[in-house]
Amino acid sequence: MQHDHHYPNLGSLTKNLSTDSWHDFGVTQLTPGTQEWLDQVVEDIVEPELPILDPHHHMWPQGQGLPYTRNDLHRDAGAGHNVVKTIFMECGSAYNREAPEHLRSLGETKYIADEALSDPNPLIAGIVSSIDLRRDDRDELLDMHIEASRGLFRGIRDALSRADHPEALAIPGGAPKDLYKDANFRRGVATLGARGLTYDSWHYHYQNSEFLELARAVPTTTMVLDHFGTPLGVGPYASQQDDIFTQWKKDIAEIAQCSNVVAKLGGLAMPDNGFGWHTAERPPTSDEFIAAQRKYFDHTIECFGPDRCMFESNFPIDRFSLSYTVVWNAFKKMTASFSEVEKDAMFRGTATRVYGL
Image: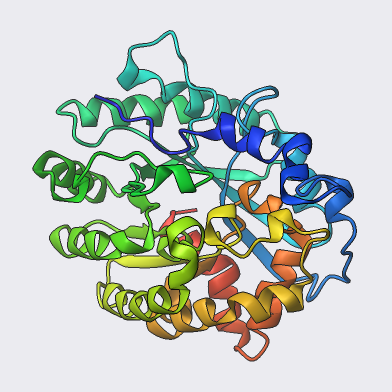
């Protein structure tokens, strides 16, 4: 049975982050996440020529999920940085609700392929879709997604994210318990590798050990660790930040020992990460972002090396906290001391290689 757990609560997320509810946080100025709010922080573009492949963003049709269409993507990607290509990451978008449950995600793949291939200024170069990898007909499902994608299909995200405290989170993952141990699921992950496809996982910090076990169990599949393993900082986790970071550092170092894993650097400005920018009067500058988050980036790059790291925007989820121009400025400033070859890997090369572009 397909588990639609990736962004199960987007309706409430949108409602939670709507204009009315900001008053609950004592914010009466501009609504965080809106263009007007983001425009309060305008920066010159750092290294405007550096080619970027953004390997992780979402999109929804008008009136569905979060408001983020192809035009919105172009507005952000074209705002000053040299974004040459992007990869769409599954998010429960444009599902065909009329179809049997296991076929619904084909609607998303078809929608993104249509948007990408009809774009007068092509940007989306790859699609990571979703299927239930536990199913015995997984090969047939993969074939259907490959066909629907018209050459853009690159892999699957069947996320491990399972929220222990869903009531505390804006985006509570609802994956089946112990999915990583499921023999059929592992067969599915292995199938991806055998077919030259990738496996992405979004999960929470306390599940890094699960991801590690999965990576060791299926060493023949290239696995992508999304969002640093999402260290949480809200609800019961708000008071445990130091302990969570200490354990997280150990987890990342262990995961990096698995040569089949690569890391996405980004996605730490979601409401659930606990930095609170989505409730602030103005978004952070790139320097403020770096001051708050640099330790996560530095540690992951140190453990994985630039040739196994790729910067990601995670837009529009992280757009509730800061603008596209500011977040990529921050990434560039953090890597100013790296060689041109190393920078090219993190901003373009690793993603190009991993996703076969």
